[in-house]
Length: 116
Image 1 (cartoon, rainbow, N blue to C red):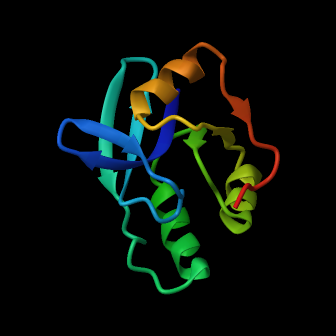
Image 2: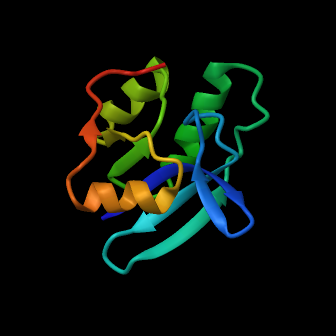
């Protein structure tokens, strides 16, 4: 199982970005082998939410993940991801590793609606 997390890499730390669609990067965490991969957000310079959503959905169509952990996500992206079978979990953690550990321990709440 793979988890997608909006991220901000700072030196040796990987922080969770405040807003899903505006994250500078995304971290993909593979639960099966505990590996991490960081990819750039190609939609970071998009001019509108619709353009950002279109670019991200194109990117995500090439990534095999089933779970998202985020601090904040808007209604358009939330609906698209939920309609594609993705589970979206809320975190208030600052660091990616803390949120991943809470997910592993079933300590995160699944979002049932957007929170932006």
